[in-house]
Length: 400
Image: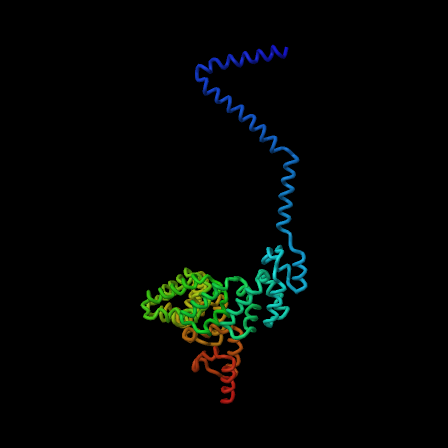
């Protein structure tokens, strides 16, 4: 029965093939072969794919590799904990350090202790910048030597590290730092200027020297475009005035220069004069921050009856006012007005707004007790140094 049945099926299959051959036997043969190959290939792939033992074994290998890659060095963690390091902070900041098998925390501790750092400072440095423990003793020595070529004492360096450990440990490229020192010196910056950069913007020495050159070139170009005759002096002056621009992009600084000119309707000569003076102080600010503060401050001043020209003069006289948030600016203006100080006086002595509101409030009370007349003698006294203000107050009381 099975043979007859098989024979019948074959007969029917041949009957189907004969008419097909007339329409193209070769094409059908190729198609059949393709379908048969596809069948066996699919079956073979399925067997491999769903073979349970092999697949499970592969997963176990992956899980094992993943576990190993995320395993922390328990011995290192114990050492750091004994040193007083905040291990939780290390995990948040640079967790990869805790997985390293070879580190130099003992060399780092010994090195910093030899320079006068306390155990508390060392622990704080590692907690906030864990990669410090990957630096070699030789690299630390060389970098310290470079910093000492600028700063006078080891204690000065320790104080900077306590405040900003990243500035020292972020890069171990000492050759790049040497190049930056050479470049800054070539601009005519003095040892005092270099010390100021290292104290306030130490990351500038970790910048690729090409970035610092790019900023100097931009300032050089700005000076020439505004009709300046001594671009080298301009570059030196602006950087020494505001070292923080070395941490900003050229695009940002250029946008701020253009904003100052367009917002205050300055001629090239006026803008150059402003940048050569206190205008350099705000070149490192975010362009959006300056725009926002100026817009809100202008609205406040115009609502108090100031003209556009008076508003412009206030900011041109002392651009650092743009550092103030809109709330602080408004509060200080209101505080001065409540003391019967005229808005015109504030506009002409705008640097007073740089003094904290608590100091302004206290000094106004002290001066009123001494019968000081702001309309007659002005409001500049509010911005005196503490020593100078106390001397002025004593003189006022003795004259009564």
